Image (cartoon, rainbow, N blue to C red; front, side, top):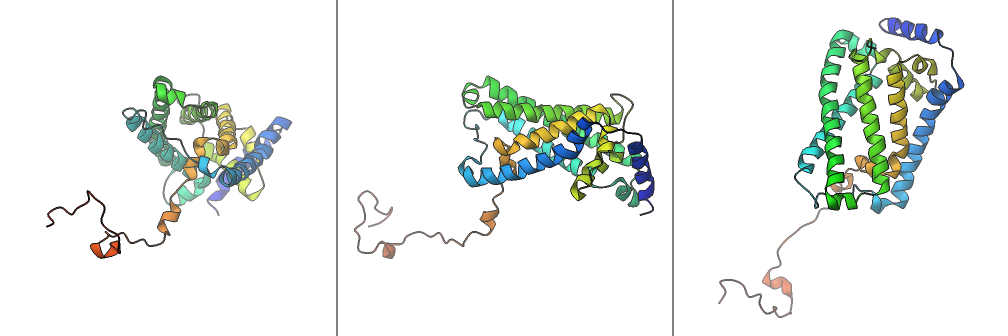
Length: 265
């Protein structure tokens, strides 16, 4: 609790100098809950009324060479990006300091690993778009819904890279988002959103946050729903015994012609 005081004091100091506008309230107090509601209700609706459409509509049969490179790059990269967001947004700065990880050490590894993950994700999504545009059968199978999905997804990824570079000081003076963006994000879950923290954050983080919320709003209505698919039922499936049918299992039926046993009399 003592370790949390400096961070809380810095957040309060930042918040005290900000005058919230109507736009700030709509973006950082209202829009997050609208996003959550649309996402949850949309996912439930999609599962109930479009269960057979809960798929990526794989195009692997049309082209295999490029997708073998692009798909692992994108999927493993986006998983690493997701883990980075979980650590950076949900785990308070004082917790990592309590286990002996200084802010400089955390920042170094976050930027290093985030750079690799972001690069892999970005290269993967670009290759997937190139494949979808240049391979005829894949392009023919691309719907307007897919194009909208790629637009929102690619935009969020690009803006995330820009925000990462801005936070690292490559673009601008650098910024520790754990002092404001992360605190605001966690405040949403105990229904006391601190919009003033996001209002004071750099523009790159604001745009990335809005792009992320827009992506989650369209998520239930695109092929992105497959990210929440898992063969959980397979673990609890009934036990099935597979066995060959012996001669005694055929009953009184005569064997069909052409199916004599090899090596028989």
